[in-house]
Image 1: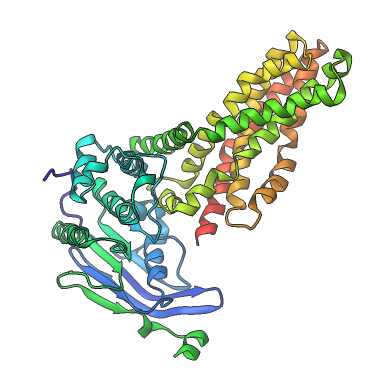
Image 2 (image 1 turned 90 degrees about the vertical axis):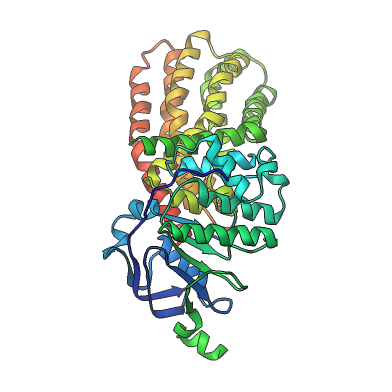
Amino acid sequence: MGDEPRRAGFGGRFTGTGLACRRGERLVFAGLEFALGPGEALVLRGPNGSGKSSLLRLMAGLGRPASGALAWDGENVARDREAHAARLHFLGHLDAVKGALTAAENLLSWARLRGTHADRAGIAAALDRLGLARLASAPARFLSAGQRRRLALARLLVSPAALWLLDEPSVGLDENSQAALEAMLARHRAEGGMVALAIHGAIALADAREIRLDAFARGPAMDSAA
Amino acid sequence: MSSLATTFGAVVRRDLRMVLRQGADGVLVVAFFLLAAAAFPFAIGPEADILSPIAAGVLWVCALFASMLSLERLFHADYEDGNLELLILAPAPLELIVLGKALAHWIASGLPLLVIAPVMGLMLDLPAAARGALVLAMLLGTPTLSLIGAAGAALTLGARRGGVLLVLLVLPLTLPVLIFGAGAVEAAQTGQPWRSELMALGGFLLAAIPLAPWAAAAALRQALD
């Protein structure tokens, strides 16, 4: 298996204190706390609409919390957006795959977007780890939904980042790809990386902490639903 | 510093590659410009003494509308497929990324217009002396159109009927470019100096380079909040 270049030992500590999120009039969650250190994993669980995606977006810096603060090594991340962006990978609901480009070109442009000088070998290794080597030069519009998801996951491998924020990363994946994802996560944590992910189904993550978002739900809409 | 250049290059290269692959957008802009400008001799008549005085204005208005055509997709495609989140989360100033997108838009839609505008000038009986002024004025004016358009495209992102709103928003802002752009060509046509008009166009461009990306970046962050 080809190894892509990585920064050894990510380090850092990512914390959230008193976090609240508001969507329109509705308070989605409030008083949420978390802490993530090197090698640790956080699994966000809860019913639809409980704020798993919202929390991941807040963690990424796509939007600001209604109250509370996110900090990296004690410093508020809102103070330096670019520095925070440089240490994270965000995988949302959308795969961000450009159909007109080939799978390899998609990966290359993502890596360059993050300022990484990715080489062909690194791209090929990432595609190989997610079982896409055969499809490297196929236009991405011909990929299936699961293959697109795998291509989006390969993005995490072509440029190094300490913090992975993954929203339902296993949607549409077959068994082999799920195993590849679990191996990716384990390796990232072994290298000192952190993972926060929202998921409904099962995933093998050793010693992961779990946050149940519905436990932090307040506000009128959730009360009437309960 | 070099990683910023890599990011900027990645944005420009990807957008241009997609234009080349898909082709439709660039061809559409040129075809629209050709057909719109060619409609005037048919509607007004082929007499040189009528066409020649309005040629500069016609070419500029057609170029303005043509460059509006592909603006709506500038951020909307990225917004729909999730790439906008990645652009915002790139470890570089969002303003720089917007500048890259505007540059790619100009290369794909403004540059082709520069090449065919003198040919269309021939059709509208624009004197040979004014064609140089036309190309130079467009060289300075069309990047400003792309930049102002990028700010408009960011502001109307996610709005219903965003395309119409975009045109309504952007057109008034581009009037100074239109006035001085057509003014330069008219001055050259009548044998007057047209240096000051070009300098005004250059000034607009220099103002738009920092201001438009700044406004667009603020609007994009808002759109994804």
